[in-house]
Image 1 (cartoon, rainbow, N blue to C red):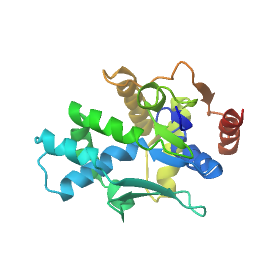
Image 2: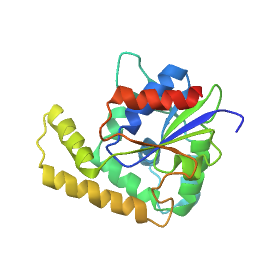
Image 3: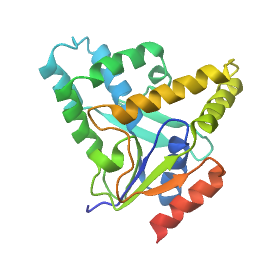
Image 4: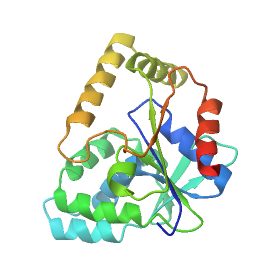
Length: 222
């Protein structure tokens, strides 16, 4: 690839988003949060009043989706801009997630958004995080990382995250959700969750965030 790309794939709870954000800041590269693509697209469809059965209209929106991700040096959050407006809060709404889930099952939309994701690979470089960045979206990426951790640790991280936000959680329930999500992601027909053959696999179970970032940074430097 003419533009260097670092893909960071893995299941939920391994820290992909945080690692991608920090690495992108360090390198001064662009950032792609693929998980937010479909949610932003859902917002675009909703704001235009388009029926999700109108595939031609959906493809047109997907092809011209004006989407950008911006990081702030003093924040752990990544702001998502759609049509020039910050829609970060709207992306987290349950209704947005439900709409995104319906749209993600439409084949022509997936194809159109695949191209849109690939369009993020512009100089000076791109850090892309998701579940199929290294296996499907950026097969020829120069740098590939796959983060993993055992399900118990990932469930515990999710529980702490909920508690930090003032919510309660039941460990056994969260663990069951994590394992169910893993099963769905790894067995789905299209773009199943798995490491790319040429990816550096990092088990984050016993590692601190700084240790993970150090390993990823070393890969890019080398």
